[in-house]
Length: 144
Image 1 (cartoon, rainbow, N blue to C red):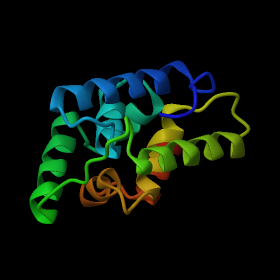
Image 2: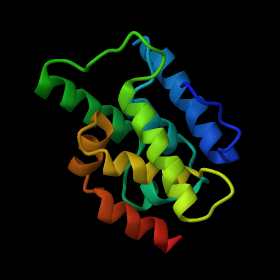
Image 3: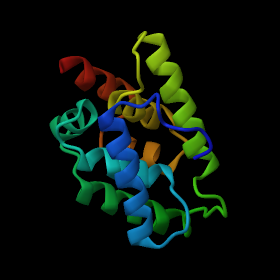
């Protein structure tokens, strides 16, 4: 992750730390969108965690969705950098989302919406298959 995270709120920072842990546990050598999604699901008291919970998306469901994606595509693209290029795109989209809301920091909700909108990513595909595309995520985030 090339930029610092001083502009991320404590929930978003915790989700990023959980994503790094998730990637380490899986020994894949990089942080991908699937790890970020699992990290967000682990932070249940964040806006993203609550929205995922209302959508019925758990860490276990994320893991199962990633396994299904891997089986379907026969591989998950691995990168030699600490984060995949798609995670960098998601982080920038999250920053833009926070700026558009005029928020002082990037929140977990910005990360979740950026993941849902990254429909070409593993996490975006998993969210869509679990019924949590961008519109559903926006609705749940608006619900509080």
